[in-house]
Length: 316
Image (cartoon, rainbow, N blue to C red):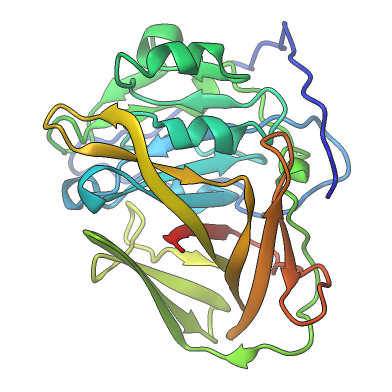
């Protein structure tokens, strides 16, 4: 396992002036342009921008999710799901709806060098941990005044959006190097797979292989996931990572426990790419390390297909 040493940057370059942005008011169409390449480049800095994204019915369709390099799906209170989109190449003009952070996010983000986290807030008892974490917290109160806005024809709290280019995010093409992911040609083996479903207590994700688009089309809670302008969300690689999901010391306002997803350790995984499924093992030695995925039979590194990666944390 490769080890990365944390380096905190005390200064970052100012971001260029905000480009002309579309709107999210009813009737407006937003054309998101972004990376989604999922490549671990050999040059550029190691920064990423992570955005916590709402994932219940009233929040859909989400904006800017199709431009993410990596999308993490985690379990939250009452068995629901929430997403964290990671941008390391070209963040889109607008992302959202933005929601609150969880303790799981802090451990997951420690693999990156000085990551920025855009989120709407957090439980009061969690906020000191967010402040102490090796990341740049960019909630509405700590971001430039024009970075966040409410709109999109959605009702609160599902109507908070962020303009990444207005943040001091400094995302770079080398930001995914620390994930431990490798990208390359399809490995030998695997079994043909046309659809796979991952279930949380009160949410589910289904991925259907499209040979025409060479993507796993994403459905959430039984509905096809779409972009704000009507396109379909699709991933080049889907990782079902089996992890320990346990209770934490945090609760929401209704008293529901906030689950903590353990992403440091090792376990089984299932990797979907190119219409095939590969049984795999995952290992992350420490929070500063990325996660390596190897084939279950011979322990060789398992390369992902070029493009957007979805990682769904399933309970082991």
